[in-house]
Image: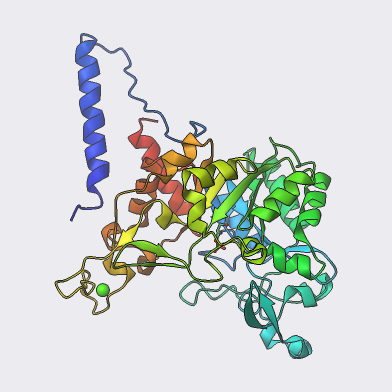
Length: 407
Ligand code: G3P
Ligand code: CA
């Protein structure tokens, strides 16, 4: 098993060797500067982007102005609002139309009767839904952190923001910091919202027009799992850069292969339209070429780039490599990278992978409980950007990566 820190040490050693060779080729020993700066492998030839996934959601309740602000203070290049729609047609930031787990709505007796069951992407869900609340009512709620092992002391303290408030925050921070900070809005469950008469696409285009951010050079990347949503916005005049997200249901630790089960097997608009392809079709050369007709990049789940696989014993059972008595993800190791980044770059698409998280329980065995090892692995592959719940760690790792490149 390779020690996680080894590649970095090897890289430094290799660079030092190159520097010595260059020095001796130049006659060596004089004081003339020697450049050993190595190029980025990204599509743009720039450094990889760090996107604050739902804000700095490892620290604060996700999708709040406070979480976005924290990500920006940490140095994130983009913050990522997921968008759903209120009953009165306002775009707000939530990961799901069902706001039960991300807000304190279930604790408020005045809203008890709003509990209901709705079908979201073909699956019955029971709870409280943003589309049954006016914005004024949404503003009575407090956001919750969704992971029980993350800080709980901020629960209920922060409001649910509108897209407009997020745009205002980012514009203000761009001015105060002088940095090129962007937003990375996602149309969440577009088919679901359209069926309610609350389509996200027209509203997002109107918001970006009003912000003066409907252009290719705007600090905006628009993403969706549903190709139809991106295509509709393109036809309706959205000119920002766009990103096709690529999902899967799970992976099989024994084979290292991704698995596909509804509703995560294919985009829901494909399911509705009878397109039987799986998300996996998107990462083939033909799939990438198709995406290139309407988008600028792809946002794949990270095992599409680095598969994770366990070691099996002679009986075919997962070996408990970390000795904790469980046989799970923490016992599996990262495998050789697929060709997806190279294939996407060849197709003219950048690659922003999701989601990077720091907790040891979320790291494969060979990352040795150090999230920076995972970041470095992906940066070295030429990844163009990544979504992280912990932008500070992603940025520290990026600094280390830049040092490796002599930058
Ligand atoms: O949008 C990229 C990534 O955020 C998709 O994952 O979990 O937020 O739906 P998720
Ligand atoms: Ca184990």
